[in-house]
Every structure is written in structure tokens, then in C-alpha cells.
Amino acid sequence: MTKKTIVPMPVIRRLPRYHRYLEELLKNDVKRISSRELSEKMGVTASQIRQDLNNYGGFGQQGYGYNVEELYNTLTKILGLDKTYSTIIIGAGNLGQAIANYTNFERTGFNLKGIFDINPKLFGLKIRDIEIMDVDNLEDFLASNKIDIAILCIPKDNSQIMADRLIKSGIKAIWNFSPIDLKVPDDVILENVHLSDSLLTLSYRINEENLLKTKVEEK
Amino acid sequence: MTKKTIVPMPVIRRLPRYHRYLEELLKNDVKRISSRELSEKMGVTASQIRQDLNNYGGFGQQGYGYNVEELYNTLTKILGLDKTYSTIIIGAGNLGQAIANYTNFERTGFNLKGIFDINPKLFGLKIRDIEIMDVDNLEDFLASNKIDIAILCIPKDNSQIMADRLIKSGIKAIWNFSPIDLKVPDDVILENVHLSDSLLTLSYRINEENLLKTKVEEK
DNA sequence: TAGATTGTTAATCGATTAACAATC
DNA sequence: TAGATTGTTAATCGATTAACAATC
Image 1: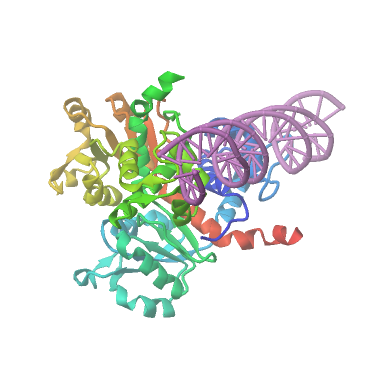
Image 2 (image 1 turned 120 degrees about the vertical axis):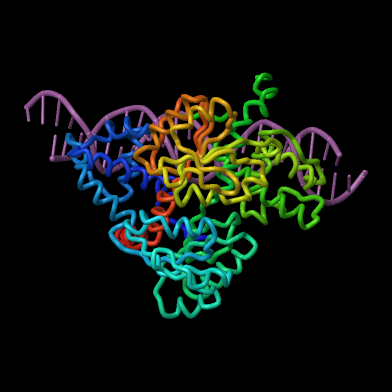
């Protein structure tokens, strides 16, 4: 289990997309937009946009539409981007390092405070001024640093154990890149990025037509 | 638009997960499993498992359940993992390099054939014996190499242009890591990994309770 | 004011779950 | 054969779309 959301998950997963489109509009100095115009840009129904937004309040104005800047700021707040977050990365392999180097997240308010690994060769090395530390020091580090999000980038064999350790030390949100379904208590927020699952749906789709050819022909 | 699937997308997105669990069972020498047992392990309904699998055929046996090895092999085929794929990576930044170094994909049959970038400093450098090439050579390369999947790891400003170039050169499947909604013709398969969207849903969920506190209290 | 567009309720559609006859 | 479990149809649930009164 992971923490249950109040608003349905399909709605939440669309919010970042709205935010991206509104940012674009704002950048292009568009002042107002109707749900219909936005729906055409995004390839969704105007109804869905209005329904989605109304989970959080009525931000539009009849006969006018939505004020772009206002809606953008509102979405920024809804997504929690008006706050900053302290993060740590567990696992300084390829992916962990790539994320550590990815300064876009930093710019959005996700501040990397530490990187941990089990490989002694990496200890002391720095990525963007942040030292790679021995994962043995994890508990000590978490006791003296308030960390909001742990980013898990380790091979799957150790990731449940590591998740347990993180949670025991008070971590309430995990961004998991390990290709495994972690078990977490339901006050912990778990967000998965299953790269391999994503790639497999791609290879599935490359083959689907051939796979189901006989079936389709039957119809 | 991207290519429409025959089987509903929610089903397809669950297939890699079934595959992972079956692999685990196979590793543990489990010979057979019923939909009920599997449902308990996976935290889904037995009904859903049977419905999902029956999109592809009846692989079980009444009174017995499913043969683990057989079902695993079937899922491997369904996911297209009985074939190999030639891939290229566009963008040798942090993420592109991380994916290039990630040998797990290679092991599953996704063979990296080339890496491209615009940065001359990177030309000639090798990642796992694969040279980073000038993206100017992309069209020539694609003309003489049959590539199944292009992995797009470049900043969003250029990614639509790059996608257009790839498609013009005959690429039929794109694994996109750029934080943007690419427009592709509907014979091209597009699979997105929107890391920032994923992170934003995490920060959303950290704040949801506070955000909706008043609303929830009203009820 | 008249036209436009929202917020919201109602209708539809699709996905999930339940039920059970078929059958190993 | 009796018990178990599938494949599949029917029922339910939830999400999306349509419709429209409210209102700027």
C-alpha cells in the first residue's frame, strides 16, 4: 500500500501536463484561455479540463475563460511547487548520478542534500558539490537532516531492505527507480518510475499487430 | 497521435508486472499458480488477472491454474522479448549516458547501435564500445542501419525537430525522455517517460492533505 | 444587454469485479 | 468422481463526456 489520494489518481497524473501547457502559454504572453482552446491544444475534451480543475476550485470566469497567469500560479501551488524539498539519492550508479546531475529538478525546488552508495571507491567523490557517502551513515545523516524525498536508484535485490531502512528513519516519500514493487506502509508516499516496464510496453506495441493478427482477422 | 493499441492500454501496462512476478516464481521453482494465489501476491483481483490474460488466449487449466514456466514464456512472447531490437540514443547528456550504460536492457535484447549528440567535445568518445557521433550524421546512419527504437534524451526545445527527423528517416518507435508531448503520425509508436511529471505527482501528494484540508473538513 | 464560457449535474462509456457454468 | 479453478458473461463501479442553467 501507499498513501491514498483524495482526488482520483488519473486526475492527478494530468496536472503536471496542464502545468506544462500553462507555462508555455504564459511564456508566449497569452493572457487568457478557454477550456475549449486549451482542450484543442492538448488533445483532450474541454469537459475533462473543467472537471479536473474543479476538484480544486472554480478558477475560471463565465464568458471569459481562465486567466493564464492565475491558473498557472494555482497549478504551481496545487503541485506543491511553491515549496522546496530536501532530497537524497540512494545509489550512485549511472542513473543515480544522472539524476544528481540533472539541475532542472534543483531549479524547481528539489534540493539534493546527499548521495549514498555501498561502493567504497565512490565515497568522498562529489557530484555538484554533494559528497557521495557510505550508506552505513544513512541513519545518522537522516537523524540530523530533515529529508523530504528519498530517490532510490539501486539494483532491485537491495531496494526493499533499503526502503525499510529509509522508512524506519522517518522518510515519508520515495521516488523509486528500482524495477520492483516496494511494500511501504500507507502513510508513506511511493512514486515509481519503472523504466523497464515502460520499455516493455514499447516492445509489446511494436509486436502487437503480429501477435494478434489471427484474432483480429477472425473478427 | 500515436499508434492505437488493440488491447486496452491499462491491460498492456500491467503485462510487464505480470512478467516480473512470473519470473520471480520461476526463479523460486514454483511450478504452478492459480489466479487467486497470484492475485494475493500482486494485490490485484484474480478476476483481473484472468481477464487480462484472456485477451491473448486461455493459458490456464481448470482445476489446476497456470503452469508458471509456460505462462512466463507466453508473457515473454507477448511482450516481444523473444525478439531483439536495435536502438540508438539521441542525446549523450547525463540521462542518455546513464541509459547507454544500463546493460540490463542489452541483456533483454535491446541492442544499442549508436549514440548521437550535437556537442563536438563528445564526438568519438565511447560508451561501452559505442561511439558518440555527430547528430548531423543521423540520416546517413539510419539509411544504412536498420534501427527499431530511437531513445530521445535531449532538452525539450529540440526534441520535436529531432523526432521529425527520426520519423522522416523511417523510425517507427520512440522512447521519449524529453519533458514534452511529441506529435507523431499514428503509425509511429511513442512511449513517454516524463520524469518531471512523475516527480511533480510526488510533490503534489506530499501536499494534498494540506491543500484540500478545508474541503475535506467541509464534508 | 447578448454572447461566451464556466461550474456542475446527468448520461455514457469503459474498465473492473463478481458470478458461475464449463471442464480439468 | 469430487474439488478446484478456469474462461467468460453479467453486474458494478468509476471515469469521461455531454448538456445546460448560472453568470460574467
